Length: 115
Length: 116
Image (cartoon, rainbow over all chains, first blue to last red; front, side, top):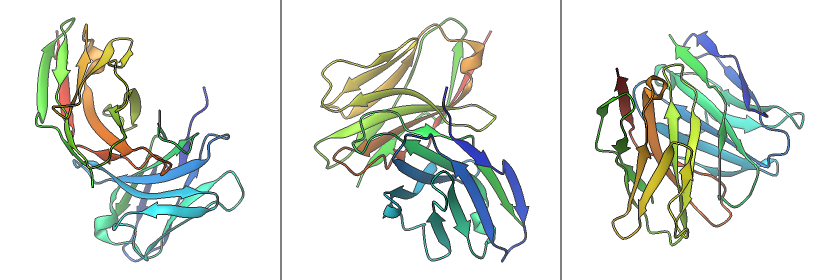
């Protein structure tokens, strides 16, 4: 069964360092997403990406965050200068259709710990 | 704006019994989708079931069914014949329909514990 894969599964970094989280969405999917879950809290939308550009972003997704699809398969989330409050589980997701009529496929998450 | 409310932070159920996890929502969108996801202790998000606001029949997927009451704005998840492996966090979520893709708004979740 096709799946969304994410690397690394866990990353520990120092405050102020840059972090890149990687995702390989399901190959025939058109929409890609990043969500975030701070420990013990609900899952929050960060950004959606379609046709090589951001289609929507939340207020959490400030100038410190960026996304790109550098090679047609990987989908990356970059945090330029990490803060303590960026510590969270980051989920990549993808969906096949433009219209939301079904499943959003999530990866297993990348846990980011900022010290 | 969309809002999901899950009022049960924790629930217990006996193995083989049915359990209902509550979810109410608020939205100004005319068309929307409602989702339930399971998050085991390992952390991944597992899709369980989907209901479109335009669907007249309640969605079912194996042991999962979604009790959709549009007038009450509720989308409760019913798990029949609970199993020990059902112990997990369960999130209700919704998304507008209309070409914007799947921007999900999640609730705070319900921690379900299945007991022998």
